[in-house]
Image (cartoon, rainbow over all chains, first blue to last red; front, side, top):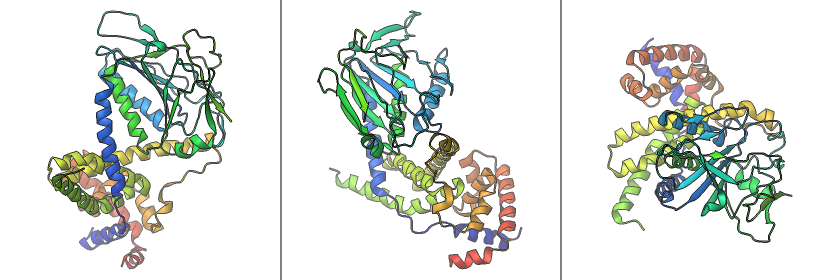
Length: 266
Length: 176
């Protein structure tokens, strides 16, 4: 290989580089601010009394952020907690049992919905898929700081605050969500939520006429990273199994449901 | 509100971004074959670099750090995008995935020559020829032994040169 040939290759490659690229400074600044806020949130969340962060991964699309984050989460837990029960699969829902490493102040439930014939209809993104999320009735905490062998089940009514995070919601907006009490609902989606959440015509109604549900479509393109933060929060706080997963049941008669909230697809 | 010192830090950082961004996006875009993924990865890496910049880290060290972080992010995103594209037609037949080089407007010949290289050779070639990194530096960035880098570089160079042999004059004319 001669020096001339080397220069030829170099010139040919350098010619491929666009010279008119401008850095998106506003966007970079926004990301910096976002990272700063996220760091503060991580600190603050641990001091709240009894909080349930319910992360429902709606991504049925392999490669989506929710799908991805599950594997990240599983990997973290597997490496950092000996004895952690992790059942990764792409065929059926995953149950992740994360031992609490400190007095638990917040609970996180992961309810993945992986591709199955019933949960992943082959529809265009503008069509609302027809499936019902499992109800939020209770969470079970598996402590490892004590010698208690059995998980402790806590009804969600005991929580002071519940945040339901619908990850990758843009692609699959649930037809119905039954909750035990008022919840903050955050839609996360990197690419499509900005349009698909309002456009799919999802409405929130409550059976008793109260409107306590806060809808917060989260359009930030960094939502994947935000969800990553949730995964990080999960790790030190410990937790949980989801109880009562049954997508075919009508849960309106569950005793500890104070308010039933429905998402009705128009 | 930022003070004067804060303002100066931001200005210096912006200047740093303007200087590094085009080459980083261009080179990482060539490695992963997708300019959007590269732009997003570099933006994220620059955002992560802010704290280091605040601590007064040496710009050269910081540049190397950003390069590695951006490359890792881009690789990861690209990997997941490939998975997504593989499965998307099955789930959403009406959606056509936007792939790779289409929006680049690159020379097809050069693009093909690069794309045909194995990943390691492509990375090494881009880092060496475009970012002017030494063999040792590339080895540190990619976690490879210098001898491995040399071998990869030599093979990439030979294959690129062969592939470009007939068209290189045209490419250079386009660039000038």
